[in-house]
Image (cartoon, rainbow, N blue to C red; front, side, top):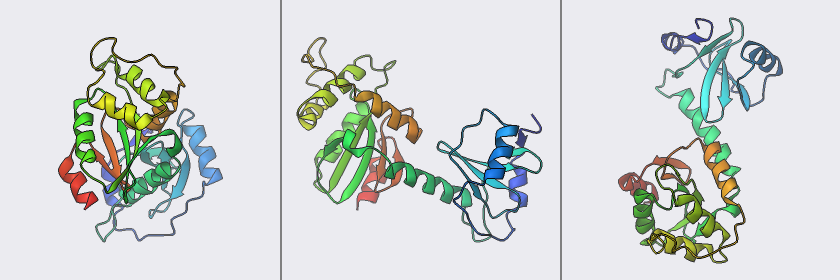
Amino acid sequence: MEKFVTKIAVVFLILAISATAYSLDINVEVAAKLKADFPNMQFSAINETPVRGVYEIVSNTNIIYYAPETGNLIFGEIWGKDGKSFTDIARKKNMSSKLSSLPLEKAVKIGNGKNIIIEVTDPDCPFCRKATDFFAKRNDVTRYVFFLPLKKLHPNAEKKSRFILSSKDQVQAYKDVMSGKYDQDNSLPVFSDNNIVQEHLEVAAMLGVKGTPNFWINGTHVGGADFTAIEKLLN
């Protein structure tokens, strides 16, 4: 365990170290050492950090630090003397990369406004429905809606998601579902499932979200129906 985790306090001892070049290329030697030390760890990138001998590991949506010389993993943040968090910058870069690679053509596109919103929603989530009502009153948004039906909380959510994604007019189907039109048992029309919902579940997993709603407003994340925060980002 001692080898696996170096106390977060170590991070704060390195804050005053001056910055070096920040590389986006995977270091092959470091990657090999990391795999040898932690064979089950999954990662997509290894970058240099401002701290000599410590590397940034991008693992899904997580930023972890690795010291190959000692074989230690470090969980925490690296801050510069200017008060900026290198870790936060890395997270934003990582998420920006993920957002740019999303299959937006698989999402339900609603609107044509200047503000781009990527949304992960559940058709039976009450807060998601409040968000739908909120955005319906605006003409300055383009929404790309992905579904994450929370089956344990909302048993009918997955079927409703499949219905929307299999509909010829997805936007109208979405509006009907979110309005509560099909909330009564067995009221959902018969449909031929195209199974696109599986790709939506993969998107949610890639973004690291497990609950709804989640929004990215012009690239900035807002978790939950925080309409004050959303309004500020839109304005």
